[in-house]
Length: 105
Image (cartoon, rainbow, N blue to C red; front, side, top):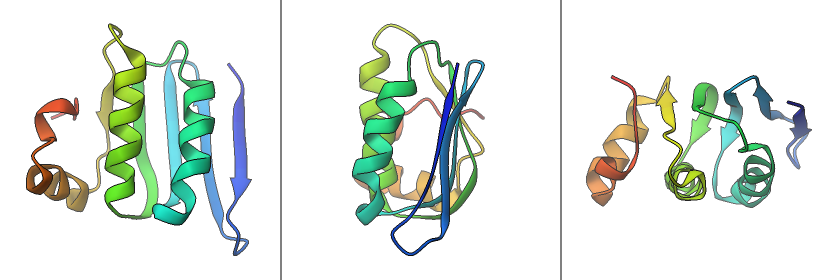
């Protein structure tokens, strides 16, 4: 499966790529970047079973929206979200959506 690498409007790195069954997301994921990442992730979602967030450098609640959309789009396929930033788990709890996101232990 192919990948897609892009830079943000400020020239900073951000990347989303599919490697085998893993969708790797890195760089900042904030509201001003989320729309592009959402579309690219949807394009790459076929055959993905793991979403790896290890490379995330900055995030806000828009990352929750992305993950919820990808989990919904995966349908019956079970996704596992790994290397979750600690603040993202806190946001998921705060918004009451943690149960809908398959965070790995």
